[in-house]
Figure 1 (spheres, rainbow, N blue to C red):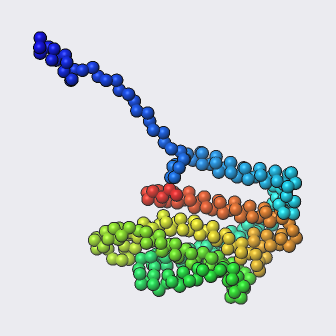
Figure 2: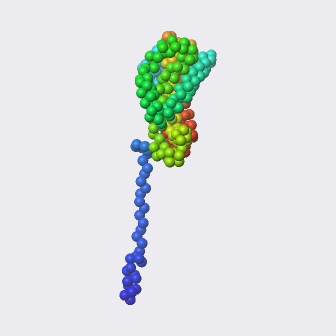
Length: 288
């Protein structure tokens, strides 16, 4: 009897306690670094643009701002349609895209190897980095009259302004990208007996490529700015040239339209490069 009583009161045969489910902690949808769904991201972005458009339409429609200072959205769209119909818009667009493509490619093709070189070897950094750092603080605007004296008023002068405005910044940013490569990676290459040339081509450059791509994406935005600056002076075509001509005749709708067009072009190129970066460097976790 005592054994049966002990068995009945044994903890191993006690009735199981009801399991209470712990409430799941909700994932924060806001805060520092909190991710959001792509659909929500797009919705917020579109809402911001729509809100600004409505505010513009209301300010001009209610007569709060005179058309000479800020034309209505309808006036801008009509003017762009007119310029598109007679071919002026497409000529300016082709000319500007050609100029920025050539100037930016020349600057990037020279900046990447130089940035990798001074980011990898301290001797080359001592020889080049102070000079590049010195020149990059010189205002690009001051080089416009000099560039006209050096290369005339053709496309070469536009290439030169874009080069001056982007090359020196790119070199220093690419140097920083290379310096962020972990020293353990380079040490592994030396342990494997690789020469410096192979360490650069097989370890340093592939590791720094995601950062270099971001540098090119950011500097492309600067290139658009310097392109317009180059076309504002001594030009006969291009988006910047058309803005200057429109200013002389108080065609504010053309000025606003071309400024918006430049913003759209910049946004498209930025998003294209960002999307390409996600595809090209997916294995490195490059999701910026």
